[in-house]
Image (cartoon, rainbow, N blue to C red):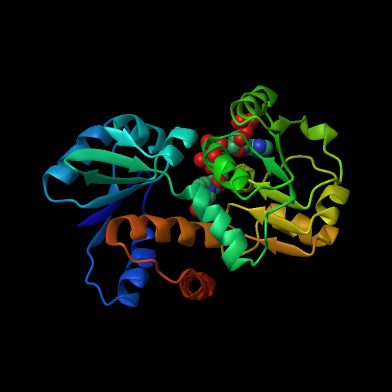
Amino acid sequence: MFAVFGNPVAHSWSPQIHQCFASQEGRQLVYERRLVPIDSFADKVQEFFRSGGVGANVTVPFKTEAFQLADEVSERAQAAQAANTLFMRNGRLYADNTDGVGLVRAIEQVANYGLCDKRILLLGAGGAAQGVIQPLLNQRPASISIANRTVTKAEKLAAKFATSWLPVNEIKPDYDVIINATSGSLQGEMMPIDLAVLARAELVYDMMYGSEPTLFLQQAQQAGCRQTVDGLGMLVAQAAESYYLWHGFRPDINDVVLALRQQMDQP
Ligand code: NDP
């Protein structure tokens, strides 16, 4: 049995995505949503694995707690200080983080864009940003610069990963790739970024997704950016990596992104 733990969790697409993967290899799968009270994450996870649970995904707001709860963690989870995938390994609770590899695969395999030698601007310094920096660095970009509303957080992340940071009002049109890892689009808000910065970029990626382009992507399109992509590919690709960890099968990502997009577009 598999499940995604979150609060809220009703919006999660994980059950549909994992069922799509399972049907690719003809596997029967039980994958549920588990709404967890804010103060009961550890109890619920332990209960799940005691009662035969095999793997769990973890979403907002429990990723840090999942990392702290584990007996052992992967290098990716260590770098992110957060986990979105849990399972038992040799009798011990093991935590991994597949968000970063999900973003990289979504950019390279779904959006068909190579990151090597590119100048990357990462907006945001929250959990998602922290989880993607090392996997992005592994692609050997020319540089990664971090900008965040709260400057001290950008500074701290840049120091941790030996990369650079800059204040939002000093961002110049110097970047090939801009990745929005802020949750600003959720509130219909975004950083005050010069349109010339968006226009100069070859790819603007927003980790958020929905049936309509996010506010951030709309601005990039209006500015004339050549390629704008939302976070649906990342969502599917991070799930595919969890699926691989649990079942040893690498699902096809592109078909599932297309299927979900069609589902989202339905009224
Ligand atoms: P956090 O709450 O940890 O961080 C939020 C970040 O957004 C902070 O950097 C915060 O800045 C910034 N922010 C929030 N509101 C605004 C605003 N109005 N203007 C400018 N900056 C703002 O969230 P996460 O890092 O976990 O998630 C970030 C986004 O990534 C979410 O939208 C989430 O849905 C998405 N995501 C998508 C995934 C996918 O698979 N597609 C996977 C993981 C995340 P400050 O530090 O100043 O508060």
